[in-house]
Image 1 (cartoon, one colour):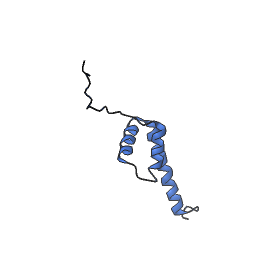
Image 2: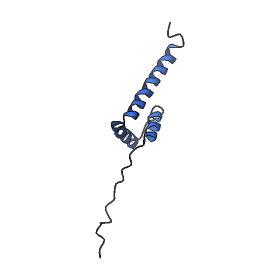
Image 3: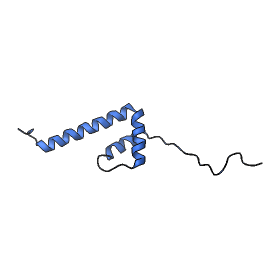
Image 4: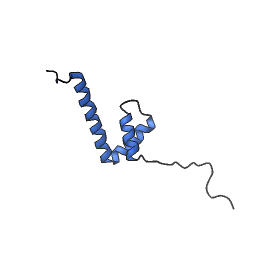
Length: 78
């Protein structure tokens, strides 16, 4: 009896990102460019996950505040 499944077809496995993996990518994206695959999966995860979107927004806020602080110095530019 022949195999009903053709052997030439490959099954695509979709692996969704966990929140831990997403947070690691979010943290790393400020230090090095992401691959196309990482960017795609991160955007997909952020579309679904409010917690990770908040983490990304908070990370950006902290980086911006730290950058401003370092540019102005401890006295706040006074």
